Length: 120
Image (spheres, rainbow, N blue to C red):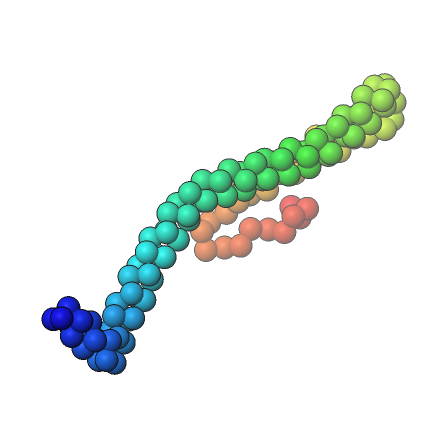
């Protein structure tokens, strides 16, 4: 009979019922947080692999799409003609201009601006 009295006393105490409900809610939140952390720890390597693979595939596709047509066109142009000579001479002029710009930058005192490109 004492068991019945204690069960009835607990059931009739609304504060105890609210406290028990809050305790269960806090425990459920803790369990949910630990479950969520475990799921994130599981998912993170998969996301990293996906992003890495996506970046690799994108860069590979872009580089292949640029390099293949360029090489195809370069190999199809005959070697001894004015187009090739003009491209080669232009490339040499560009390299010379970059070397000249570097030389001017190294020779210029630290407080003075370097002369404009193409001016002597």
